[in-house]
Length: 250
Ligand code: PEP
Image (cartoon, rainbow, N blue to C red):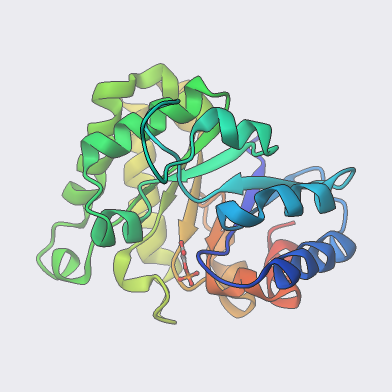
């Protein structure tokens, strides 16, 4: 049985005080559910402070990015071992904002995926097509291409310790989510692609949907058979909304 995972990506938002307050409110509002893991990904600078607030709670901590190298002369970067020291368990790799705004290509994403696992972190590999690619009928080719690029470098077994997030670029931060059917179709194709290589890995991997998830649409997205959770951006910045999404999953 796959455990649902709801991950909140706070992006570059908030202050130290608001990050602490948000973490506290989520911790206070959580209801126990064995079938659900919940994770927040604050900006790097707030990780240690938020980690302190999460002690003895069931809320997990993740990071939004990772350096592909583990130490050395990489000004401005944060390594996997540093993230582990900050109590992170997960890290997002290949978010579309990193790909489009910071020119991260498939090969860098693959190196980050491996760096995360080498440091003992679980990578959340994001894949997704742009609106233009969808309109040109390239959705599956793009998504499976992004997956294959990591598979080729990291190997299939690495996906036994990874999470994937399907995040159509046109749905991120736009208020326009993929329909449950659109998301399910892509999730099923990701699972089938992994399944053609290893049925066990395909059935166990958690495939999250991300892109304008909110309390009002979470239940219908999460009830689809191949959607195992959500990667939530904007709606994770309000405790009440994020908790309602968690409730829809639990
Ligand atoms: C995201 O940041 O990964 C995301 C899906 O954002 P939003 O939920 O705001 O669309």
